[in-house]
Length: 506
Ligand SMILES: [Zn+2]
Image 1 (tube, rainbow, N blue to C red):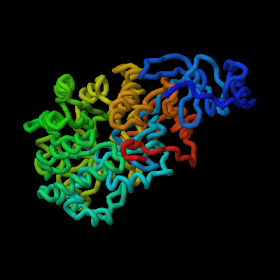
Image 2 (cartoon, helix red, strand yellow):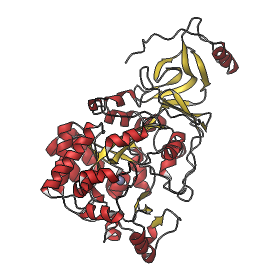
Image 3 (tube, protein in one colour):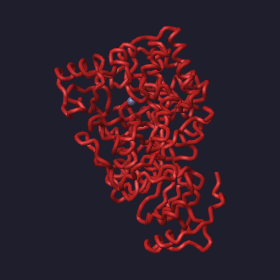
Image 4 (tube, rainbow, N blue to C red):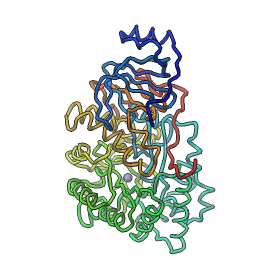
C-alpha cells in the first residue's frame, strides 16, 4: 500500500473549470488528473487522527492521494464545509438487499456485514449478491442454519433454501430444530457444514445462541473450537437476555470461557440489548479478559428497543420475568400496535415469522454503550417488509453523529467516526486482510468515502415511520463510484464488492 502509484497524466479543461467555479485553488501545471477529487473538505481519518482541510484524489477503486495541494480531476466535488471520512463499516447488518442498502448508503454506510446470524449456503449467498449490490457485503457462516441442515439432511436443506430468505423451512420446522439437541453424528455434520462455509470464504462463524436453546454449552464450545482451528472469530448473540439469574453476565462468561479454552476470537453482538443494566460490569470483564490475552469485542446500536421474531425462543415461557417487561412493551411491526396477552399469544401462534419491536433497554445504558471507547457502532439493521421495520436500518449512523455527538456531546466527532470506521475494520483485519484497506482515509485505502455536513447530519427514521432517509450525508462513494451524490441516490450503479477471507482462494 503506497501513495507512489504513478498517476495518469491527463488533463481536462472541465476539471479546471469546476475548480474555478468552486473558487478553489488551481493545481500545479502538469499535475496528474484523478478520476474523482474531493476538494477542500475537512478530512477526518481516525486511524492517523488527521483532522485538517485536504484534497482527496481517487483513481479507480482506491484513494490515490490526500494532499494539502489542490488536485485536478475529471470529476471534482467541492467538499468545503463538509467532513470527508472513511465510509462507515457496519459489522452487524441483517438487511442484505438493495432496498435496505439504499437506506444504509444514505446513512453513510459503504460496507455492511451479516456476522451475527450469518448465511448458508455461503457460496450461493455470495453469488446471489455479485454484481448487484449497492454497497460492499459479506457474511459469517450460520451456526443456526448448519445445525438445522444437520437435522433435516444437508442436501435437502440446500435444495429448499432460498439464500438470504426463509426458503421452504417452515416456522414449525425451525422452532423444532432450534429446541432440539444434536446427536453426536449430527454434531459432526454440523461442524462439517460450518467448515464448508469457511472454505467458501465466510468471515467467521455467526451464532444466535439465544435463538437455539437446543444448542448445549458443549455444542457452542465445539463451534468455538472449530473457529479457533480455522483462525476465524465466533460472532455471537449470547445465550441469555435477563436481569435475574442466570443473567446477561453468565451469557458473556460463556463466550469468555469458550474463547479462553479454545483460543478463538469472540465478538458479542449488540451489548446494548444483550447487557441491559449490566453493561458497565460486562465492559469491565471484557477489558480484564483482553488484558489476559483473550480476544473479545462488542458492538451497540443507538436505540433502546430491539427487533426480533415473535415466534423466536426469546419469547419462550418466562420472558416477561427474564427481561422485566410485559405485553405492552412489545410492538407488532406490521401495524405499530402494542400487544396484549390475547394478541401476543394469537400472533405468536399464527404468524411466528412476524416481526416485533421490544422496548426494554434503559436509555442511560444505551448512552453508556454508544460512548464507550471499546464499543463498535453498528446497526443490527433488518429488512423492510411492506414499508415496515426498525428505524435502526435507516438511521443508526446519522443518529450517532447528529444526536449523540452534535446535540448531546456524549462523544466527540473523531471518536464517533473511529467507532464507525477504523475500529470495526481493525477488528476484522487480522482475519480478513481486505479489511485493512477499509475504515481509512489514506492513500492506498479502498475508495469507500462518506462526505457529510456535521452541522446538519441527522436521522429521520422512527418506530412509526422507519423508512425515512437520513439527511446531511452529501456524497458516498463505494470503491470510487458515487452511490449518493449531492444528497441524492445515484441510480443504476452496483459497485458493492464481496468481502471474503483471502484464504478462500478467490
Ligand atoms: Zn441479535
